[in-house]
Image (cartoon, each protein chain N blue to C red):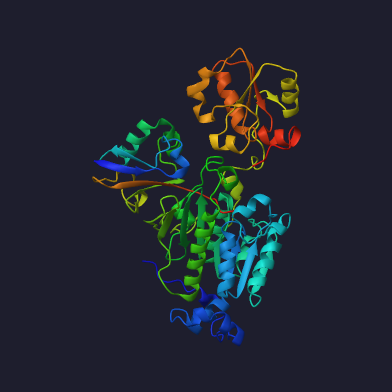
Amino acid sequence: MASKIEVAANTTAGAAPAALSKEEILRYSRHLIMPEVGMEGQQKLKQAKVLCIGTGGLGAPLGLYLAAAGVGRIGLIDFDIVDFTNLQRQVLFGSGDVGRPKIEAAASRLRDLNPDIQIDAFETRLTSENALDILKDYDLIVDGTDNFPTRYLVNDACVLLGKPYVYGSIFRFEGQITVFAEPDGPCYRCLYPEPPPPGLVPSCAEGGVLGVLPGIVGTIQAMEALKLIIGKGQPLVGRLLLFDAMGMKFRELKLRKNPECPACGEHRTITHLIDYAEFCGIRGEEAEAPVTTVPEITPKELKARLDRGDDIYVLDVREPHEYQICNIGGHLIPLGELPLRAAELDSSQEIVAHCRSGKRSAEAVEFLRKAGFRKLWNLKGGILAWSDEVDPSVPKY
Amino acid sequence: MGVKVIIPTPLRAYAGKQESVEVQGATVGEALTALTAKFGDLKKHLYTEDGRLRSFVNVYVNDEDIRFLQKDKTGVNEGDTISIIPSIAGGA
């Protein structure tokens, strides 16, 4: 099994352990009275330097618990702005923070929680150009990221720098947590040599997430980080912890180091940071709407035609629970059911298909066109655009 | 051998929304072939065009990754669980 990782050993050898003030002894008394932590453990926490990448769903519990525990230096890196939809799960932020840079709100919150520690706030995107420079000053890296390119970037940087990396990821109701730690343990590429093609695994914005899920996964990551720092307990090195929130089950799978891993294996080919967007296949596709050749109608045009009394069949291809949130009176046939239910449609009638933002309905139009329908339109921008351009009383989601 | 294949959340839409499926097979390869025969849409998510398991999908027999056993020739016993664990990246 993997040996314990001495995170605090990265601090200057031979330096006297950081002394604790009277206030700190009182603040951390609940740590100090446990032999597993004690003065020695708390001093290790004080000397530790941990970088949290991301201050969102995972970053929130990470930041909060590491700060509360007295990690002496916490780096935070995030380039994003607090959005109203973040508040459902990103508990570092409050309603008053909407529109504020996340890093500012996060640093402010953590400094309030624990004024004795040092918070380094990096309002920037982590890139191949800056990653090695930013990571090098920290003992331990914790993952609060939300996309594949950054995860591979962080992994490779950690392998190149020899830093342990506490990994966590979520999807809907499931989570994964492990600790990647050289030299004994595997790295992210040992687990997943390649990412999925873009678009296959939706982000939290696209697929949804139960707000508390990153809270649970991020808190487990914080626990692993603290254990690594104080050098107690069995870390998740070589163990992949899977969490299923719906079944409330934890499972553990063995995670082995891959001797042929290009990053951490015996014959390493990754000697510097690469273009991770390209590696993940999203170069040139990032943030672009898919090019569509289906005929489109704007919400204003549709409204005008409906008001005029034109015989248009409005086809809503969203899911039933979305219809409950808001609808424009369309006939609901979820996209997945369309192949079976296309016979309900009248090909002599003009059909305008819509979904939330226009992507799924474009697929529906394409499908119906191939099935022989000719009078088809895709509602450009979906019900979101309808809300913006025609009827603001329709809630957006 | 009757084995249970656990379907991960991102792929349940292609497996009739089921969390797990019982299939027959003596090896992982046979079990997954039986699975994709039952759910054709799963095939392209699990396998490349030249029939290799996609590298962002890991397959475990009980708690062992088949890449470190005999890959798709790894034998399975009655009552074993095959888990399909794809890469996920959410966190914000």
